[in-house]
Length: 209
Image (cartoon, rainbow, N blue to C red):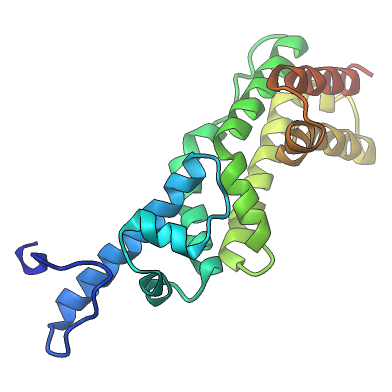
């Protein structure tokens, strides 16, 4: 670490600077920039400009584009990092008890999930079509959440066969999906409590029919 003494992340590399020192400086600069964007995510802002990210990171705006090809590449790195940081949010809910208890457990899990990742998901959706790594991460997350719905309500689903079972699973998955909760919270403007109640009522109606 002594080799980095006096280095500033946004400074130009000297022509005679050792390769290892330049690499370390670049890594430090990238980390500062990603951390700055993650801080904006934590504060509820999903799309700060390059100048504000650079100011928060303590580097020049030019340096941001030395470390990343564009803001999409930076966002993809930050989204991937945030997904890793919030991995525990996607742990399955308790599957104990009757249907009412299991519905409430899943609904609360999804509300906590939305509380934690709504901002990073908004950032990811803007670049999903252009960032294969983000698209795959989101697809993996959707598969995980669908599998959780299937496990949570296996007794109710197993009363049906074939297409009827698949359609019921599709409906329950949609009712408890991140996208549905986001629509209720950010577009319809419902409170957290109201949204949770809507999810509970929808799942209960589906699974008791």
